[in-house]
Amino acid sequence: MFDFRKSLYGNSTSSASADLYVPRFGGAYANIRLPLSVDSGSKFCIILVVVAILYSGFLTMQDFRTVIDRMSTTSTGSIYLVATRALVYLNIAVILWRVLLVMGYKPAPTLTDAKLPRCTVIMPAYNEGKNVIKTLRSILKSDYPIEKLQIIAVNDGSADDTLYWMQQACENANGRVELINFTRNRGKRAALYEAIKISKGSIIVTIDSDSIIDRHTIRRLVSPFIDPQVGAVAGSVRVLNRREGIIPKMLEISFAFSFDFIRASQSMVNTVFCTPGALSAYRKKAINKDLKAWLEQTFFGKPATIGEDRAITNIVLRNGYHVKFQSNSLVYTIVPTAYKQLCKMYLRWARSNVRETFVMAKFIFKKFRTGPRSGAIVNFFMSSISMLLPQAAISAFVAAVFIDPQVYISQVAFATVLASTAPVAFYIIRRRSSDSLWAYAYGIFWLVGLWWITMWALITMGNGKWLTRDLPADSRQTISSRIINFLRAA
Image (cartoon, rainbow, N blue to C red; front, side):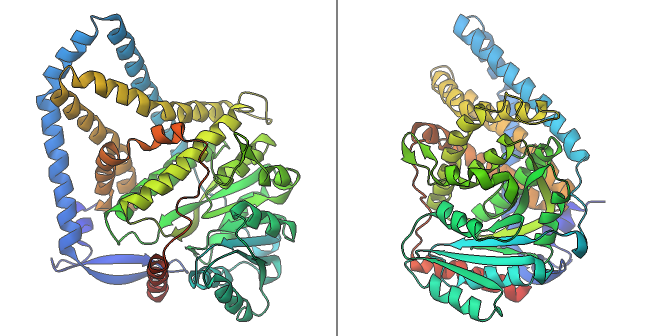
């Protein structure tokens, strides 16, 4: 039975410290003692805020109903209320549908050495410095048969010492790592393209250079390709630096819901929408003929320099293949710890999502593959709606300010807490941890500080800047220190 107090304070009965379990490459855990005061105090504050919001929501419920009644007397208000109710009921129905799908989800069985295909792992890097050694080292420790594993590192014209550390890694890898060096920065697409051209494997695995993988990760990621209909597989992304601030703690819960719930449900209808750059695998046959077009893709006449992962997923789907999610294939990656960097990351993701949604619209309603397609269409429809909701919410907010702003704000916060309960419950069920409370903090954080992301992405969808690509030297050193600490714990 889940013990909330035990989860809040760790396995120790003392109030002086808590247990942090850091995944080892072999699947075991390292036990690190951390002070309790900050973590438990933060969770207690979250509980207090949630209770206050719920209390305020119940207090203003009657006033809110009065506002609703007033809105229903006008034609515009009536239309808005009908549309809002329809969206609420639709979202509830889709969530229940996804719950049923996730309940039936299981990762593909892990293959034996004899059944594993030849695989090429590609790690592109730009201005990552010594971090590349840590990533390559985790790849070299994989339990994938050495004779079936090709590893290619690509230096994308880094301005720092990335090339030096890649060369050091190659020298210490007994010839197992091949190096491609660009004399100038050409972008991630070009780096992947050049590596795929010389790849020998029938399966292409891509791993970001600021990430660490488990020793079983590649074997598990490649296992679903035993089904010839599978064209791509998405790995499960975890937050490596989740103990380094409020933002990583919130993103850990957000990622868990995004991958183990959303992508798991998409996998059940064979249509995962995005294979993440941090860890993904592709059947070379499914993408080979479209690689040149993918490299030279444009948007509004400008080269597409972002969203390479979503774009290549669209290619796989359009070519009639299935895209699956493998929940037990784990990658640990660094996420932003500061608000400004987080916004840049989200803006890049949102812009690529807008762009590739237009691309997907060209084939999703056609017979792009044999077998059922209704699940893919439902997910596309919900994804499209999610891009328009922020604009509707802003319009409603502006209207509500002139009616009764206090009631409206109270009810929006109330609805946010209720909506955040889904990832909270999911994380508790899956991880048995009170860290799930950070989903409430994330919901409120999004409402206050990130609501504008989708709207601004729509307005500036033509902006193809990477935004987070160039990191100052001290930031790169901080990332290097995080990975080193992780490896020491492992």
